[in-house]
Length: 268
Ligand SMILES: C[S@@+](CC[C@H](N)C(=O)[O-])C[C@H]1O[C@@H](n2cnc3c(N)ncnc32)[C@H](O)[C@@H]1O
Image 1 (spheres, rainbow, N blue to C red):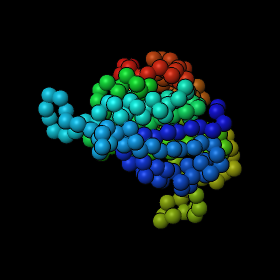
Image 2: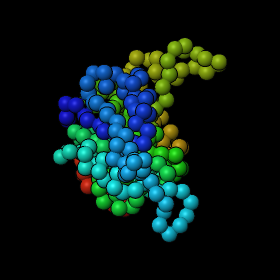
Image 3: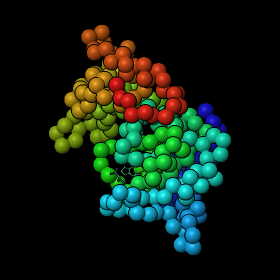
C-alpha cells in the first residue's frame, strides 16, 4: 500500500476539485496526508490563441467532441511513470467496491474528464480503464471522478476504522445488515431484541442472516452471481451450508482483484 496516493484530475473545470472532497471522511484523509488531489486545466494544452479543445464530429451529428491533441498532451505531462489513467465513460466497466479496492492499492491515479459528446476515440488507447457510474448520462466526467475518488479515499489505511470498511455493503459480497441506534423504541417499532442481548455470537448470526435476506430481496444478482459486478472476496463460507454457492466464474474474478489489465468489456 503506497504512503501517499497521488491523484491528478484533468478537466475543463478544475475548480470543481477538491470540492466536496474537503469535507468529512475524504477531507480528513487529505488532511492526514494519505492522498493528495491535484487538478489541471485541460485548456493549458489547448490549441491556438483560444486554447481550443473541441471540434465538430466527423460524419456529422449533434454536439462537439474533445480533440485528441490537448487530452494526449495533458496525459503525457501528468501521468509520469506510474499513473493509472481512468476515463469516466458511460460505456465503461461499471464501478464497484471491488474496483475501488484495486484503485486504492495503486500509487497514482489520473482522471481524464471529458465534456461535450466525449473525447476523440483515439484517446482510449492512452487509457488504462474506462469507468461508468451506471446506466445514465452525466454532463461531464468530473462528478464521476469525484464519486470514484471519494470511494477510494475512505479505503486508504488510516482514513477510517478498518472494521467499518470490512463490514459495509459489497465488501463481503452482500448488502449491509440493518443498523439501529437509540432509542430502543421509535414510533411503535422496537429494536430487535437480539441486538440488545449482549450475545455477540447471536448478534453476528442475526446480522449475516439479515444481510443475506436483504441482498436476496434487493440485489439477487449478487447472490446468484449473475452480474459478476459485486464485491471482491465474497465471504460465503461464513454462511450456513444451505446458502447458494457463489458463481465460480465470479470467484475467479475476485481472485484477480489486483489484475491491472485494462477492462475489455467482457462480463461473465
Ligand atoms: C454528455 S456525456 C457524453 C455521453 C456520450 N455522448 C454517450 O452517449 O455515451 C459527457 C461525459 O460525461 C461523462 N459521463 C457521462 N455519463 C457517465 C456515466 N454514467 N459514468 C461515467 N461518466 C459519465 C463521460 O466522461 C462523458 O464522456
